Amino acid sequence: MLSIVLLILGLQSACLAHLHHHTSRTLHGQNAYHPLDHPVHQLFGRGSTTSNSTAEVFPKVGTTEWKALFPTPFQTLTKDKARPAWLDALNQVKTQGLIPTNVPIGKYNSTSGYPEYNNGQLDPKGDVVCSASYFCRGPDDIWDAPEGHVGISFDDGPLPESSPLLYSFLKSQNQIATHFFIGSNIFQNPDLFLQAFENGDDIACHTWSHPYMTTLSDEAVVAELGWLLEIVRVSSGGRIPRYWRPPYGD
Image (cartoon, rainbow, N blue to C red; front, side):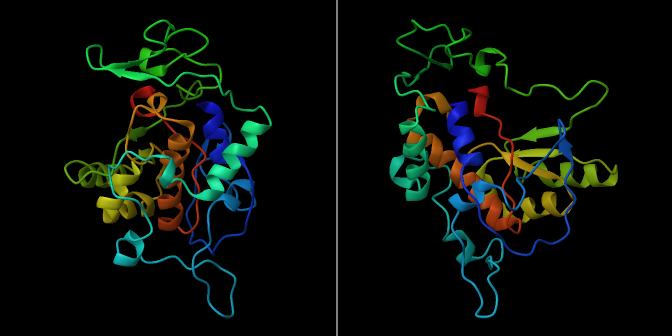
């Protein structure tokens, strides 16, 4: 699944719109968003343009025009919801042998509350799977802040029950956090997204609908990641998050 993430977060490039001032912190020495000349931008389509400018014009966040750009909230996405450019990129890297094609799709076990693999024959803590749902730490996973630092991050938002108080508190304390947002929650609570973003907080990926990712096909994984990145991009003046956190650690 890491390979699928690298596909979405890193394949081809384009120029984006003028961005309003927004200072982004770094995580392990890297900015929270991809630079404007990063190849990933070519995977995301341009919106309408003015006659005298090539800058992308984004609709106002929360409007009907803005909502029309995205899938139904909390609809677990399937292959048909992935954009053709995303599937073309997936097929390209599969052809190059960069993504395994013989990995079994996990099946959710309602008794244990976790996915299982090959009818329970594959160890979820072993090298083949190494699922963070089972607290297995892969060599490329980021779990902890650098030594001597505290990392403030929150999952699943923005939510009307808790987010306004949280964002106001962070701002009152002059603290910056990273929010691993669910795309469907951004869709349903656009004003809260803007509150966090305009506070200067960093936005990262927690998928579109929060499924167990290893229970999905490669194409559905691409759709889940791609639509979160797209709603953040359109809602933040063109930024594409560099980092993601798997739902349930899966």
